[in-house]
Image 1 (cartoon, rainbow, N blue to C red):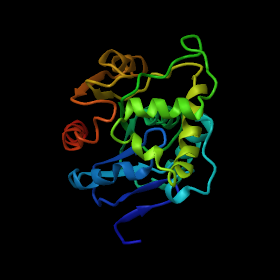
Image 2: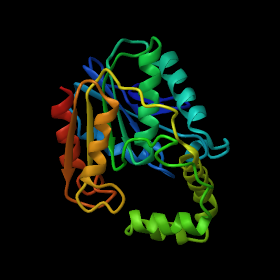
Image 3: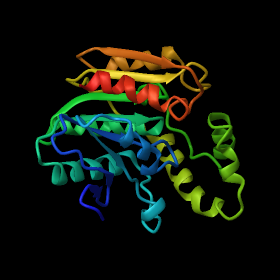
Image 4: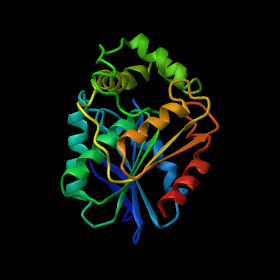
Length: 250
């Protein structure tokens, strides 16, 4: 570990001494902290970028994956309260499944003392659905999961067909899709911070209208920003997205 590295059980990043805000990033289903590695090179010194490493992938491969949203959000919130004690304000960014996890962590941060939350940024996902809006479903089969992945990420889907990699990748995907199939909060908490919702203009599962549903979870206003691209617009549009978020946060 170098002096500038931030590497704990839950968080990865590069230290930014004197940062005015800390941006914590939550990966998509099956994703890992490395998804946001390049963000650290695109942000100014005023923003420190950290990403969450969910259990059951990369260097946490031996740990069991979370299978219930409350379990995952509770553990991340505890780690935030225990480790981020320097008073730097916190903004949360989540993509796809990460949007729902980030929202649940934001709820918890507002319910009890912890890092001061300044903004929730969500991407590629509608706001959480209540049980009366959408009943929980059974966990999808592996074939259904892979069909979904091919729809969402046509360019990256070939990775899941690699015979040596599939046994390493599928457990996390299976757990994450199972978690989402049962995640239905009993109620929606309106956060006391602004929410920004981002997405791709060709996303097959999350339209601009879907992004607008996040207005239901904030008392401080919603801003919607649509970029060119599909569900994973944030990869080819990384510089544009990070530049936009930088202007929002500083």
